[in-house]
Image (tube, protein in one colour):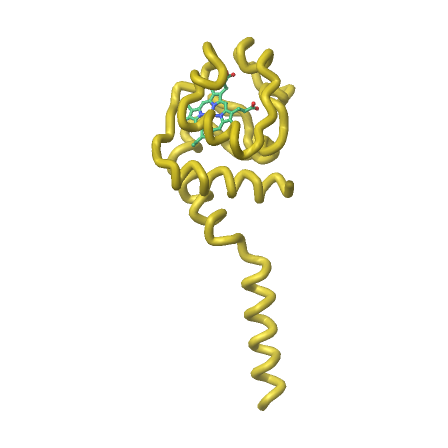
Length: 121
Ligand code: HEC
């Protein structure tokens, strides 16, 4: 009896450890709501794929036809730059092609945590 309970507890702990963090889950949901109209994780849509974007340089996916502005910018997509970008892309890279802003700071933070977790960085 006792060891069965321990086994159950161990399974629960492993399941919790393997699950995404609460922030990343919130970020995935916000990403699906806000970003997937134009982005997917692995395919080119209206925007470039974003699975590996965290900590990469801007304009780095060979399959996507970026604006000259974003290609030339060579920004490192760390958490700070991503946050500024999502708040107002034009303030970070004038003349880029992403016509979208996310004013909700909590959603921006959650989406950035999600992208970070996906990238494994
Ligand atoms: C209306 C369409 C649209 C929406 C919605 C949108 N994007 Fe974009 N995004 C684009 C386009 C188009 C580009 C390419 C911009 C360029 O080439 O100048 C882009 C570029 C980016 C880049 C730069 C990628 C790189 O490889 O340098 C990031 C990061 C990004 N988007 C994140 C997001 C996130 C996160 C969301 C959701 C919160 C989002 N975008 C919502 C259209 C969109």
